[in-house]
Length: 212
Image (cartoon, rainbow, N blue to C red; front, top):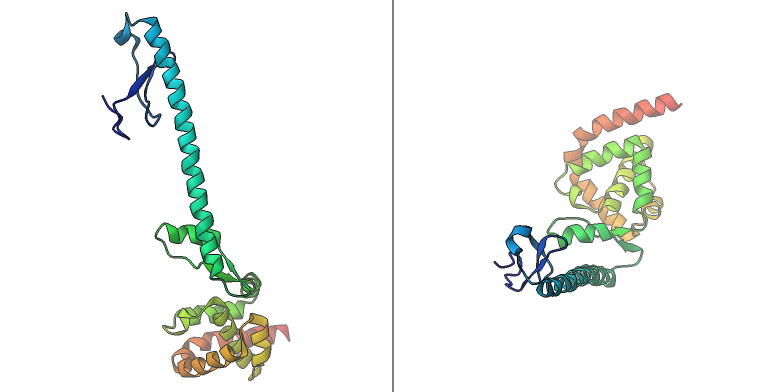
């Protein structure tokens, strides 16, 4: 018989608890039936029991070392991402775990993202505009803050006919230079967006008429 986990043949028999335990890794691999060991010397049994206890201690220590090793890896991974952080950007630890397991997730988040999410949740028009932007092949690839900035810009244009670029840049923590780039991109994509934004415009008109 050998351990199915580490292939060790150094096994011990716990006659008190009725287990066969691998001395190498501490894994319980089989149940002992008393009939199998009738006539075994008590001295040998005592040695086995002692060995089993030592093996179990080793298993616990080994388990702790594995957990500690995983924690160290997580911390190192986190610190690696933090070192690459820009100003006002935070690292999402849960996202790092997803990425580490082969998944896709947005690791970096701006400190203002939570406030913008609240804004989107509370403003139905902004939410609808974002849905339209997400369907656009070019605009959907923009960062969350950029898309919210575009949504605010479009909303102002729909409801007021003009927009304060500087105010939107400040509200979304987007630089003025980047905001100007977004305006240029939006102009190029308006032909694709016009039809889809008609529904949003109708919603905005209804909202304004109701509130007034």
